[in-house]
Image 1 (tube, rainbow, N blue to C red):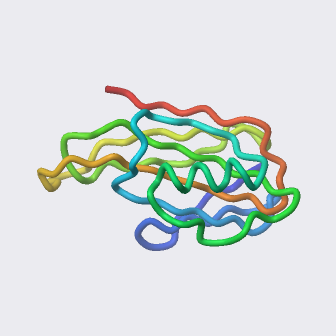
Image 2 (cartoon, rainbow, N blue to C red; image 1 turned 60 degrees about the vertical axis):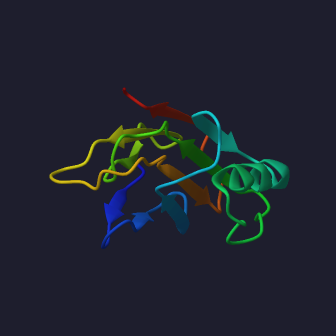
Image 3 (cartoon, rainbow, N blue to C red; image 1 turned 135 degrees about the vertical axis):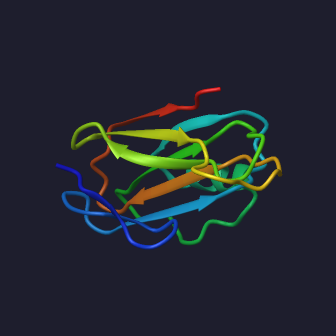
Length: 129
């Protein structure tokens, strides 16, 4: 079973069976559309980071899998993308509205998670209006 815990603001920890995972989040991506992707090679890894508007934080590891979720434009700050396990090979990313007061600035939240040991077979995203 995939276990997900949170340590501090915006830092997720992904436990076995996937080994050490890395999760990156932000409030503004540069893609024109929403995206929900399973990434399995260097070319797609480079492309998704280009859509985010940043350089990849590390090289693509052989045998790895990653997921990327690029949310729609939101009317305020505070929207977050949460990574949840459906089962040990499928993940779900959900968009959540702010809890409490939020800045009144447009945002386009994004999340990218890397699973060095692979194992992920699919991802689904929920971007409600």
